[in-house]
Length: 225
Image (tube, one colour):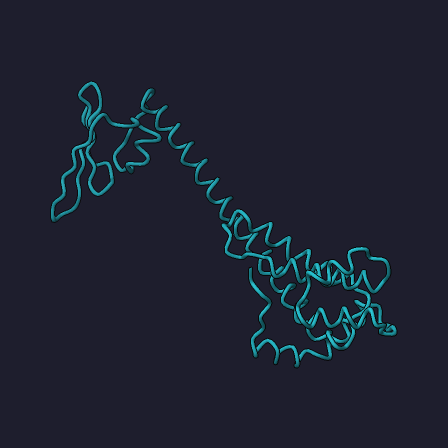
């Protein structure tokens, strides 16, 4: 379980962006204030103490706007602190959706008192950054899976072509590569003799009916039928 920890650099960056963030916050929370009751003061103290389990219990009824706000806030913190980023890549989408949930809960809040505004803004900034980061990871995983799938299909198609040429050979010609001979010529040989010298690598491919192909450094140089 990771806890929300912020570096000095982040705090400084938040300070520099304070004006813009305050304007944005006023829009999100409705640009209005309300009288802070004794009930809300208790909730504020629970937030400052990071006692979100107690806050969830006290506000789960959502009997009024104040309870709704602090229930959303406590659920956002609980979800954020419970995110495990070390899970296998198969859970990438699930992790991203958890950060989406945190952001959505925070955006439901109508009013944030000054006592906890900086704390909530920090969570909001980090959660949004994390959501974007994990969205990028999802796209990266999609690209990897697509490439792996296309590679698998290509290998399967090549294997099918080689098997077909082995059963039904076609003509070969000087200058073909080994890959071309396999997929477009005589197909798979029954045996290969390989010789390596200071001049390069030569191979003799042996086929049925005493047929032979000779390669020099991967290029067909001799056909013996």
